[in-house]
Image (tube, rainbow, N blue to C red; front, side, top):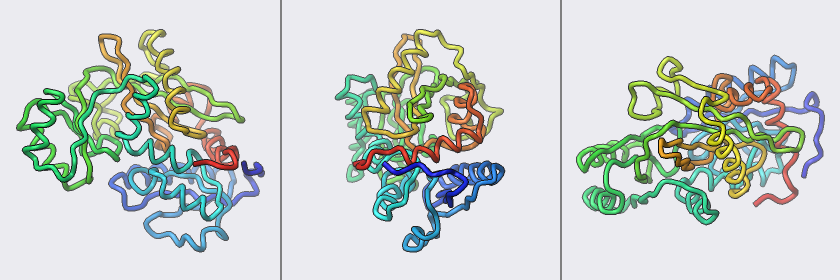
Length: 321
């Protein structure tokens, strides 16, 4: 564990950008974080992962605030590099980051812990489209939800109601990500629960639920256009369900070995089922994003949230796998 210095003494590097398909979201996170830190009078700078001199970074910053999303940014690679350089960084270590990014690996951990998660098929990159369609059809039936194994923001994701739609989604997806998966389609309300370390203790934030009227699911457009969604935070769902999601989110955070901050996504089905979809170990940092919205509902303003996130860099155990 690092000693916790005064924030005013730190040179803070906000790591963002990179070449990920989620670059746009990462840029928004990084710019918002920098504005907050600068407004608070802290010494911070933006550092684009697409153009960073790692060898010079150790003499340039004292701590890294991670605003990096998608492959290469939140999958353990940046975290591992910072470990080797001896630079403290916000959030989870290498193993938890890699697990959170690889949805199939994370679902394996969830099942081992008896946590409900949708049934899935790993669509192997070597399969022909015909083999993929046949395997999904006979393993899950239709409809199914198709998404990248290591992606976020609902990019390159969609619902397939039959073999033809699945083929179209897979053909379109080949251009964006290498690996895809299909999950049983579960109709329900998208929900998310934030976990945040505050003064050394994990706090479970209020549940946020989302309505997306007229849209088949909570897609990329709805996530980036507030006019296309209706958010409720604290959630308007029954207390028994929100409490169950909060308890499960904390379990999932601990099961994958996450540190400092995470966001666990659920579906709340009409049947009462509450399957976990995934855990995000580097949630978006937009002041209007899910994490900031949940923090605000929990009494934590955006500037304070940024300070709490930086503090997670200094509260890790001495060894983090």
